[in-house]
Length: 241
Length: 316
Image (cartoon, rainbow over the protein chains, first blue to last red):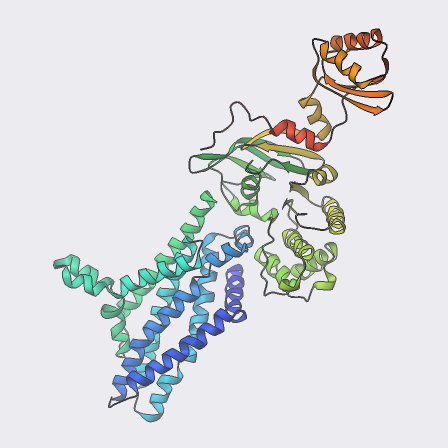
């Protein structure tokens, strides 16, 4: 596991060494704060509604950060030629993938931590239960892990960062909007599609302050499957390289 | 040390490598030659573990690339044509990263990094960011990373590309030094470099290994009946005499000075004897007749790669 942590640490540091990293965080934090201010701090809302709203809109920002951060994971290494260093290392592919995933997820955690001033503001001026915040953050981190894993997968599949980001965004958008399809399909199939929805069927309960074990299991399964697929993709690419 | 058996690799329908087999012994410096698209980089990628062959296998120190790919990668150091460097890291940190990535731990990392820094002449730039380095230093850091885990086999893809003459000389010395500890496989378009550096050649053309061996032996294989004759007299007359004789091929005559000529040709011993007699009959003197040793590596390379093999892989 040591090489995994090595790759993770290198990946995590690299985000702060390029303008993409801190520029991205600064820009999205700015937008996030503005949006929070305009939509939730104006007018009459209960503290519960504001916290719920905060976690709901944070899911979109966290997903955006995860997609933009992970697009570089493997695609950039291929573009700059540094992939050779990783691919010639005596490591199984899953260790490379896990290292990249953890590095990107660590960066995402920094973003989430930096955006925590918003719910803290509500704590100062309103009445928020710590349980609601804990549940919200558990959900946000779990959702972030899913999108990061999907981004890692598309970056492993693609040579282009842009294509990796577009692919990841498309998959995440599809998983965010399963309820639309589910509404048009009757019976068990409709229920199955509705279950796949990341937001309404799963994340919403966290934003309301409820931790659902089934959702955590579902999210963990998606992370596992995406990382497994990324490992397989890297291995298969050796046949075509 | 390295035994490759029937390696083949396809890109779609195109065969990039076709049934390539060779052996390389410990401590050899072997040069890979071939025109663009011959399959050199494909073969180096296979040996370094970046890619997998579609057929065949190779072993390093008895470890199979198919059954024990991690063990094989542990024994290989690879410098691609573009060194895989992170511009935002410092040279020392980059080397430590490469060492740890290849499984070194604790004091072994410090010791090996210190050794390769000294070996590759990187002491002055150890604390510099990689992005500040000149092309020559980038190549050196690339080599240092490739040898930091003390691999048995060192693969260098175009290591002197873009270097100035002084850097080329230093790189040549470095490669020779490395050959004392590693088996070195060197690919280069610069034939003179291969000639200077390598003990043995592997020549690829259109995905096939068309020749392997020492340079002199390859010349002999290519033109086993080639000879050089030096004589006295006019160049034109000597050319007319030689070209009129049956049994001689590839006749070339050039003037050495106003009264002497050199004749290069291929032919049997009987044909050579007939040539000498004919030259004497035409009042031309014969000073020396010897099997062909001359000719540069370029001529050898062109001879082996200009004519496509009749059963070579098709390009689509």
